[in-house]
Length: 100
Image (cartoon, rainbow, N blue to C red; front, side, top):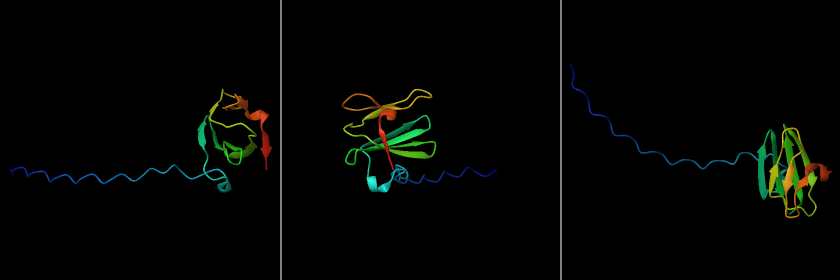
């Protein structure tokens, strides 16, 4: 029987690569959103400079004019239209005008 060989020293861990936020799914001309998120098959991104809200629901993208609303968050019940939080109070996506 051969004697046990000593273990080789472990290699040091390599530094982790920075995580990517993923590819932008909104129109590039809008730049970077001030807030974005998603839930229940829906994702959104808000662009305050252009007053635009982009919503992607299961691959269908719609852009809305937010007027004076400064979007800061979203809530959604199953089957209902999302409601967004703003400084002026909650606003339903149904109350926003779509933009081509």
